Image (cartoon, rainbow, N blue to C red):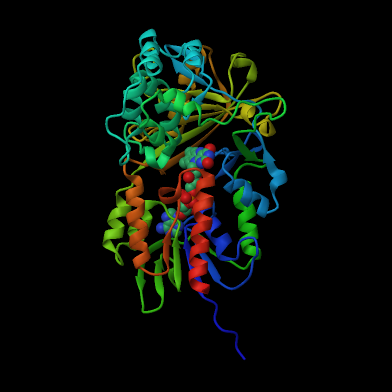
Length: 479
Ligand SMILES: Cc1cc2nc3c(=O)[nH]c(=O)nc-3n(C[C@H](O)[C@H](O)[C@H](O)COP(=O)(O)OP(=O)(O)OC[C@H]3O[C@@H](n4cnc5c(N)ncnc54)[C@H](O)[C@@H]3O)c2cc1C
């Protein structure tokens, strides 16, 4: 007697979201072979925006270099894969900001860049006297939020009304905007910082209200937990572990295969790729918004249009291997941020948005005799880096580093990685768009959307949303 045919599922995109979805489609922590899963991935390798390169004889991340440890999703998955022994913690904390003409340690008590402690803000001297006094008004005469709690808000104007524009330009935009390579002027509070939206409607001080949401200060009994984790052998070893696990579970990897179109026969979905057609009873989209829109448009033009409204920022990551003796010894914390309003001595805007002191932040990649620096360039409104050759870009960032540090920096080895259209922008009302996409997908049957444009930008959010999406489709097919 022949076995009944297993339901087939196609996962489009082998980034962390698609791999996490496939983990659940194959049974999650209790694997079984009840579904036949195929991952269609345009590149030769899976991983998407998690990638590493060999630099100075080490495997170094050239996109995400860590993930939030205060969210459980990445840690849970790493545990389920039996790889917890690979977890690594940062060697230090804190960072500097280029403010008022020099690098200064960021004030303590920031909540995603928003100050919660005026004294610490004053001590840091990152603001002008006028900016500091304006922020202090929040304590003595807090501004009421006249717009009320209804609806979404842009973070920048909301915080500026409470604490002044200088706080936004000097701290909030570089920190929160920097995570997304966007600007808080257009960034959705409900999608990126919902607690802010909750407390902004209160009549009292914003700084006080946000301080109450911070984790308790560390004590000797309860020392501070790391905010971030990484993995030995780079964050990309999570991708290798997942691919290994899924391969052992019998998942088919169609790599170097680009999905271009999806249509429907009565019971099946038909996905056209540059290597031929694949049919299945369910499809999980784990693609960036633009290719997802392209693939779905023929079946549902409205859904394609909704995906098209999500815009992306491009960034560049320049890794430099530097002689540690050439760098200033008083570098603070894990790196530095450069506000986009800062100007170089010559009056031009910096390309650099952030510098990570990689070998200080992650002791597991440190070696005596060299220092690894990683310079991030580019933002939603700044793609100047894309017009330069690799050599020109390296020269540009070294020149800027020399100005930031006040010493002549030279590099022994360099590596440039460009991430074009890589970071989705969560603009005001982003969650309404996502709701529309999910509702439209539901009308198509066993079709679901996940990925950084939909389920959250960081690795833990992508894993959490990817797993939930995989579970939902699995349940729908097996019920
Ligand atoms: C420079 C940079 C630094 C970052 N740093 C951090 C960090 O430190 N911590 C953190 O938590 N997050 C960080 N992120 C964000 C995080 O890396 C991403 O949000 C996450 O990896 C996105 O995963 P994804 O699977 O949703 O999408 P992607 O990684 O974009 O995966 C989508 C996959 O789909 C494939 N694909 C595209 N089109 C097609 C097609 N037509 N057919 C088939 N396949 C296709 C792509 O090749 C890709 O593999 C960073 C991102 C960048 C760019």
